[in-house]
Length: 412
Image 1 (cartoon, rainbow, N blue to C red):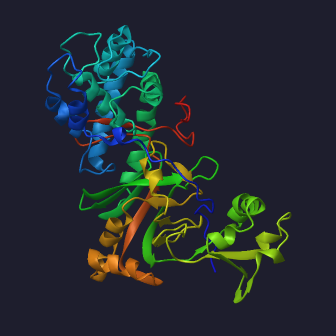
Image 2: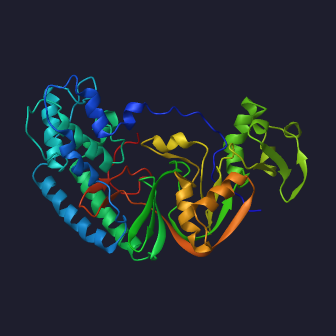
Image 3: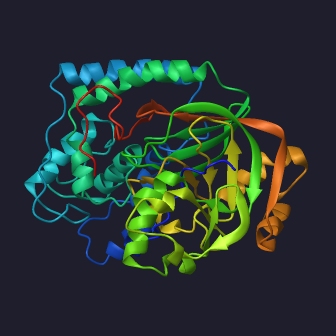
């Protein structure tokens, strides 16, 4: 039986973000109108925010031309002195803030093309500034709250020469990746922690992802998705037994029972062992196979996506849905967790004649089911920290694995 390397045994409680962070721009404005001192129409700025998103894929021959244009633009910004450092007052800047720091913030956002409307008092954080901040946050993979918090400040204060270096480095990556694409493929952009399902040059769906943390990195690879496992078992890899499961059992001997994990000898599932038969103060547990039953506690969630690779990684659902709401989604042991995985699965099994109802029924049954794809689909794990979408909007992400070769933003 192949070792499954990726899912984490420890299922920690993650706080759900405050509802205010999920307000739409219009909802945020309405909640503030009672205190506002101006009458700017916030909805007039929404087209600029929408332009950050695009149905065009990250990788394409057209992306290369847009990257070249962006590189020249950033070279010009660098040659004219770059952008100013933004120093926030003690409280995070937000709609209604009046401070000299807002003047600097406006200059910073104007230079990078996020702020177009420059009317009104230059020391007031008005609705146009809020829209520009949201646009900036979306371009940098941050929650679009419109509030200048510490993570937003950190991203704003990355020097222009660093961003230029990212663009130049990723130009070569995009050129290499774009030359290897099938007409139908799945792209996992590791630094963006995002997945695109692409067909005939258009993005059919985008999915937030959770990828490998810095000490257990998701690998760069190209392969073919050939199989979907519904309601899968999870066999705990030896590396996670050693690093996670043994310490957890020392803290809580009932952990295996609580998580519905059974103990067998490798290659022999005729006898189940009790946890008391293992010396947890040694590495003896690594000689056993630990298998988690299908169900809501299963670390793989309800479905697993298989593709051949030497790293023993895969894509899967997860019971920890709250992780998808975080800005920095680097929590796994190398595999990739997929938000709204049923939509991706439905697209993958279309060649088998399946629709969404059949996918939902297979999951709802709770029964183990392996489906071989009649139309295997290319999957690519890529490392792209800078790109330009079809509307010319430049995106940046943190160099989480330190592969860009330039000074980068400290990990949040």
